[in-house]
Image (cartoon, rainbow, N blue to C red):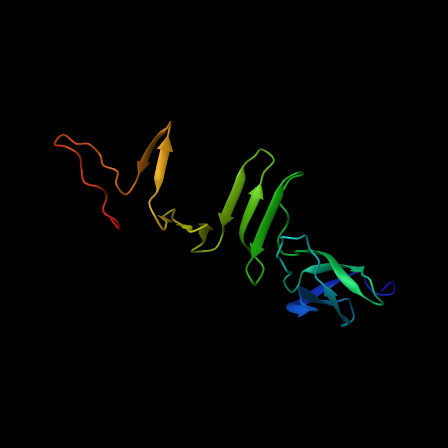
Length: 169
């Protein structure tokens, strides 16, 4: 590979299985219309193949003429994290950031959806863009040792306790 480019522009990616192992192959234009297919390499636990138009850094791999991607650069969205921070984002197919998770240096963990109708799911709990929470069961709130289950919580009144909340109201 020493006579080939060390970078190029991503054209497409494809998931496949090689020798029983799932792999991601990336087709990269290394200049002059020459296409090179490289293995997508990333840290375990990360599932983030590139988009067409990203820039790929290419390094040699074992085997004659073999190559692998060593990383990608998103040419459309500038980085924002400061030194020591961690920010990961997902992109819409046409490139703009659709949502992100950002661990700031001051301890703030910021999770945001940036497209219309975004939602957050934590296990089976769903929070919509307006902050409405949907759960498969009751919500119990605790404060200083006391707890309240929202579906059966009653407020006192001058004539006695009120009825529990009515779902959907």
